[in-house]
Length: 156
Image (cartoon, rainbow, N blue to C red; front, side):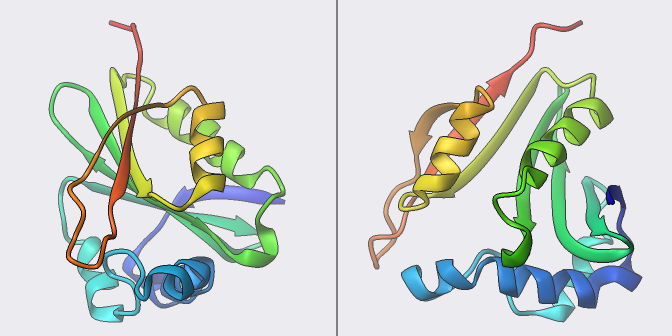
């Protein structure tokens, strides 16, 4: 059974292993992974940031993914990371993760996220969830850049 609960520093090592697995295709494609990729020290440090909410996605008590949310001002939340182990991808878990986030942060006026320019599956997935591409970052020296997405809500 898939569950999503608050993560803690005690989960950092297992979360990092899942993150490495989940982003291994990105590393092959771009030569590197997202922030904190591969560093247990940086993974642990995330838990000390007051504006971060970190959740673990588990299947029968085994961590298979993670969600990292940055709490911004004015009911704006930024999804800094969503990742699911390769063996559990394409099973609807990402959709369940967003259902969880939208309920957990039901006061949200705006959600933002970013994803690499060649991550076509991600683009399709976020657009299916009614996120709108609102821009791109400037390309880095190696040509890498991100697509920027947002989803706004009309709640009070």
